[in-house]
Length: 212
Image (cartoon, rainbow, N blue to C red; front, side):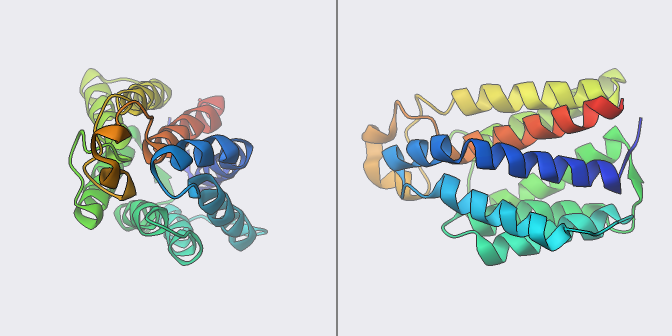
């Protein structure tokens, strides 16, 4: 199985739908340890992405992902805009000029994109950020590639790992972002950024495994 630009577009639309459906949940999580705007900001950004991509028929995966990233940077407030913008921009750089990608291509692209997010936000594992969902997703993809897994199985493993990483943020004390100001009081709350990151990884699986 390979993935083409239409598949990636289906993923982006699925992400927008999930973010819209769960924006209140994301905002509620953020209200506990942040600015209470993560769901609202992400929904605004993804709706802007849909408007930007409306009517397009892309064949270059990289250009599509770069458009998503640039739109998120310009429309999402708070820390989410620069970080998710970086994620998609780096995915776009890694897939520039490609009309189809394999599981190996996606794994390499996501690995580089997560490294870009870490460089931008200075986040390490267990800092209670989106990285805590994204790094396990990459590690699961690496293992899937090594096992010779199918694209759909790799995406399932990646989404499962991201979900586990999301839940693992609950007992952590935040060391980055607004949540870090709370110190020990940030423990016991699920990180909203890790939640939206896990949602994005699950949306990828559900959107693309229909094609496998």
